[in-house]
Length: 128
Image (cartoon, rainbow, N blue to C red):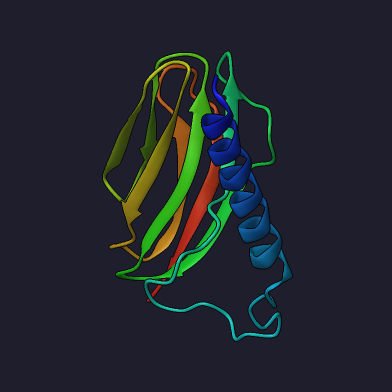
């Protein structure tokens, strides 16, 4: 490389480093902000299934009728997730993480099961 290219690379590196340090020094958002409501982004619970058995803690959610339940499921085998009473069946491709999104349209407590193994992995309680 010639000198001019090295100078440009040095300037670009210095600019990026300065920008990084500037961003790191900015104050973060208020840590005491009110809880998220509505369509605000939320961290999703993640479940892991290995050979038809749940390797993480079971999933439990309580929601109001009409809301949606969302969580992530990773399975090393192809299976389906079934929620009786909510008429939900979600395919789980092998070795992939799937976003499960279910409409809570019927009140009651509904078991979440795997179709192939029959394993119960959690429950959803829907209140009126």
